[in-house]
Amino acid sequence: MGDLSNEKSSINDSPFAQSDFRFVRGVNMYDGSLLLIEPEVESWMHPVDHISTPGNVSPAVIKQQAEAAHPGFSADRIEYPNNDSFYHVHLVQASGGKENFTVYADPGTGETFGRVQTERLEPFATIYQLHRYFLLTSVIGKIPAASVVGILGIALILMLVSGIYLWWPGLRKLANGFRVVLKRGKLLKHMSLHKTIGILSIPFLLVLALTGTLNAFEKSIPTWVGFKAKEEIPATALQSKSKDAAALPLDRAVEIVKESYPGSQLIKIQIPQKAGQSYQFGLKEGFAASQGSNSTVYMDAATGSVLYKTNPNLAINFYNAWRKGLHFATWGGEPLKIISFFFGMTPLVLMITGLFIWRIKANARKRSRTKTAADSVAAA
Image (cartoon, rainbow, N blue to C red):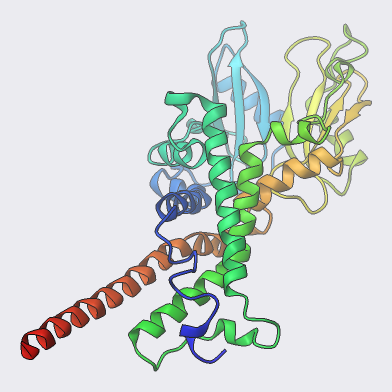
């Protein structure tokens, strides 16, 4: 492949330079990239004004401290440190009232403080609505709005696949398909740069577009292929067999889980609030799609026997975990999130190089028209 002007993927044909759909595609990629760095930005904008104490107190101590600091409330959930270095303790009104909130707990002392911001703050609340529903929920409702985003995702997939077809130089000249021309004028330089950035970003953008489409139709797609949208939990898992017996101490229940599943990481604990309810433990088992739990153990609160355990390798659980994990880059730690953020911003780079190409061509056409007019005057 010698001259760029003879390539199958000329700039006039390439989807990377098309103006159609570029704005919608770009907005959806940009806001998705911003959501990837939401925890880091939020921690910078709203830092936790507390220094954690070294150590690791027991969940029972954390529960006791939280309830002592908030009379009239009972701790029903404890989440282990994840995005920050503190436990998160959810409290509900012990009298059956509707008020509830989440507080921080120091890992070394169990002391509770502050309130965890559980709702998205601006600008990320609007960014999420834009990315997930294209700001259409108030107009057409959540499900139709998600479907619109899903349709846009399908359109993006088709554009990316057609981009691969138009770019494909053949196996023998594959290396030339990534060639950036730097010394043959501004037009060829920007065209080749535009094309190379576009094709290098396609695999990543395809994963984003495909998983984003799956997320948009998250409840519909499993039923189309004969699956339930999620694993069904039997009613017997939610109730202890000995409904009137006293519940095991929290620390003993945690000890049983750790002994039963030594290779797992405990992520969160759901504490029974009424007699007969079961303990629920969120575990992270094996290589997971996120830093959260991928399995739940339901334990008889009175005897400590396991009533039910969800299977992270069950087809529907595996599918649900990885469509989200791949889309939000939660499976590879901070390095993957950084890489994903920059790849998600490549449409912006393509728009900039596309504008350069358009400007160079527009100037060339203007000079050509001026020369033609001058030649006509001279001829007359």
